[in-house]
Image 1 (spheres, rainbow, N blue to C red):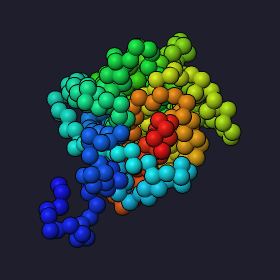
Image 2 (spheres, rainbow, N blue to C red; image 1 turned 90 degrees about the vertical axis):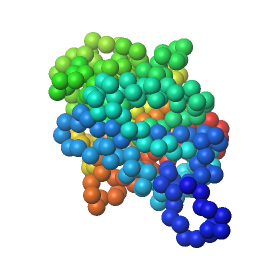
Image 3 (cartoon, rainbow, N blue to C red; image 1 turned 30 degrees about the horizontal axis):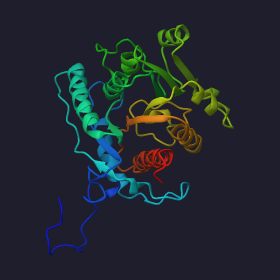
Image 4 (tube, one colour; image 1 turned 45 degrees about the horizontal axis):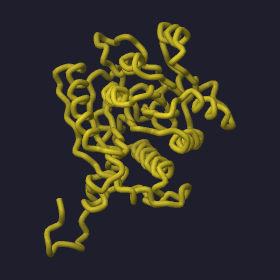
Length: 306
């Protein structure tokens, strides 16, 4: 809420919005970026806590420096609005994804040319916005998936709407490029071998230089949805995730990929998922908040807004 007249200038804490922006800086009507928190968790299969991820990202973001020295800019000036958290039904994973799709479609109808950044929550939530964009675009949508796992199981633990099945739910509508993979089933490996519209870059094949980034970008079409599962990063950077896998991506190569992605492709929307905060360990929360802000900066630069 706004501070009542006569109470301005007192040492109020920063608002609980992304970056701590006030109602003027974070107003929806003037914002180029919309943050959509979706603290949904239902099908996690090892460590829990992903429902706490959006709140932890928002909290950590309030302590970021707003100036980005890499871009020599303050990306928040494009306007960043934070919506209230979307509380999805607990009547089953499929029903929750239907509810999310309805909400996301309404946001797209209202959103115009804004970048929507969804903060999860478990990875199952990605299917709804990907399908929403695939249905709206005239051409084929590419999905760039940063992840430790391919998430191509037909179903897992009794549901096809598991976090482990999210890419299987969208693969008939989109082309998939998965980067950082280092854990999958034999069945998923065989599926990848059979299909020409699924491209996988295993983490152990990514080395120095940027040739791998060239190869990744070559697989993508013009319109790209970016889904970033934080377990795609090495667990030395982000141990706070439900299914950590050793040998993941590191910070600066990841940023080089993202900077070129936003410069060379049309990124239609973004999600960041699977942060499961660890009590007393703030570094992973802060890293993911900074990752989100870097994406906003790269997007704004790609749009010629910074």
